Image 1 (tube, rainbow, N blue to C red):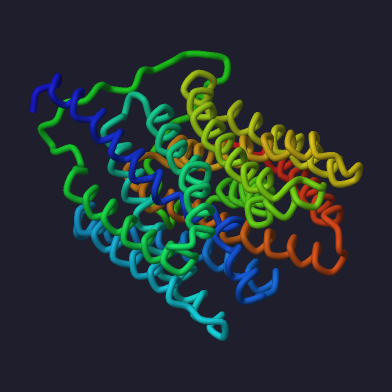
Image 2 (cartoon, one colour):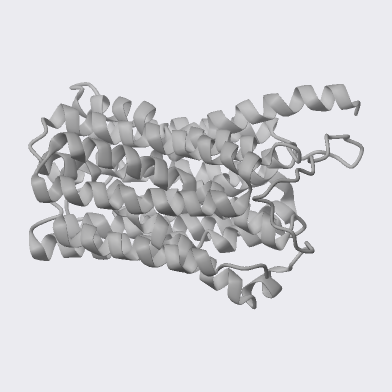
Length: 407
């Protein structure tokens, strides 16, 4: 394939990737998607928080499986498989009855969570392969699509829940069918570059932020034996836990400072907008200033976000809460780009898909911390205790961040 054609088609693949991620990211709209189960079935906050924790676990397991399956059977069949799982998961959730909480864990967390995890890894690794020269931009755009899904689809879903002709059950079924169609269509479009495709090589930038060490491709086993990996893993888990916690109870958090229900729902979408903005800005910062500055900036932003939201809770301030949500969205949006940048910078590209999916397991640790945040809220009756804990963890993450050295 000629270089010109390659450069043209890769932007089409990026657009398809962003569109696919836009629909896949609806999984993170749990703060809105859980409303019918709380209002219609009166399922407890702890039971619904556990579903989100379980969803994050199977999202990570799905992403890991996607990295392995894609190597064996390619992105096409992998995305079709993810479409089937996601379609069955969301449509099955729409068929639940009051006494079937356990089946919510099966349909939403296990089926939809693992299916979207597969799609996430396959789309990111496939589209990124076309942008060796602009990895930060590519990753940022894909993550932006995933991040703003809550705003675009979450608000649509919220309105459909209240529509007399739809209701929550039909909305879930429609969502399952739509996601399945989107993922299957993307499967027929997205391709990995073949051996004959000529793509621009990454520019070698010399700047003060650049890390100078001999780079090599680490296998997954070699990466897991690296103490550097585990320091970064715990650091990223602590940073991600702040955003994960807020996402799981964002609407209720805004309601707790006397916001109107409509504003609370809108703020879940605003959180998603800043999530997407954080993803693309972090990609740009990484391209210009390098891995180390990007990771430190994301960590400091997380500390400010947790501190601001804590102040909002302590002083019962809606404007400060809105600022805290915006900052949290940006800090959480930086996490996937930071994870990708760290993995590729330290451990190479040869085993990137598998290594990246393993590094993303920090989401599981973060999900359990988010679950504990919900427990703290339920036992204390206030969001103060959860945000004190999250602030402490984000400061601990900064200490780990400063200690990260070459593998």
